[in-house]
Length: 264
Ligand SMILES: NC(=O)c1ccc[n+]([C@@H]2O[C@H](COP(=O)([O-])OP(=O)(O)OC[C@H]3O[C@@H](n4cnc5c(N)ncnc54)[C@H](OP(=O)(O)O)[C@@H]3O)[C@@H](O)[C@H]2O)c1
Image 1 (cartoon, rainbow, N blue to C red):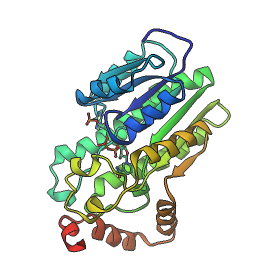
Image 2 (cartoon, helix red, strand yellow):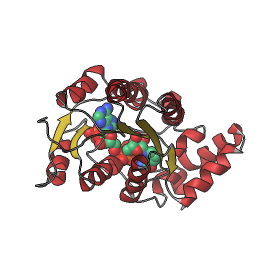
Image 3 (cartoon, rainbow, N blue to C red):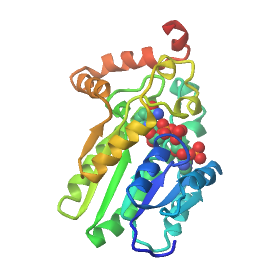
Image 4 (cartoon, rainbow, N blue to C red):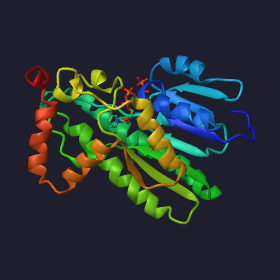
């Protein structure tokens, strides 16, 4: 990217859903954008985000791979990254042993390995400049064992935990780390995870623009974490005082294939 006096935000998973809305928040706040996703739809998202005021560069790369992360990082071309919104992620429904191993692994590689690798690269650069804002999209799913979504919830538990540890390590460095923890949000997520026949897949969900606005504000204010919406705040508070075995059964009722039919 060309160097300019404007700040640069890198947003992953910005083709749709929460990531697209986070990119809109960044653009409205005056950032130039470097956005990434794994399908060519990222280019049409870039066209919609680009204005006379906002320069937008799109990268179509698979962030489940080292090469994809390197491609995204290289696209900044040495320009300092002022904000990193590490949001790309995918879910996967069904019982673990019924999932294809490659699909389960892709969830881990995208949500954990690719995210952490990108954070390592960008975090080092921010720390050396004593300046930066990081937002990681975790989830309230990280608070509960994800029966019929076991791998996904495990990845989000990792990110929720990792975010707080990185924040503590960077205390006083000028770099802040914020974890956005949404609950069920209206995006393509449940269709991509093959969970449209589940109770959670069919439930009323939070608006993605609202979730993104809450996360963006928390990042700007340098907060440690934010759970989007009072119902999710209540759910996460309950999860903290409920035995894991009970939470696992609660999750079964929400995510078991076909639970959406029983729910009607
Ligand atoms: N929706 C919810 O209920 C919910 C709740 C809590 C947390 N979250 C989290 O919110 C984040 C955004 O999800 P969303 O709900 O907005 O779903 P979404 O609309 O499906 O967006 C996911 C984004 O991540 C990108 N992505 C996925 N795998 C990728 C890969 N390997 N490389 C590059 N980009 C990749 C997708 O692009 P491609 O299609 O091009 O791969 C897309 O842009 C995820 O981290 C998710 O875990 C969602």
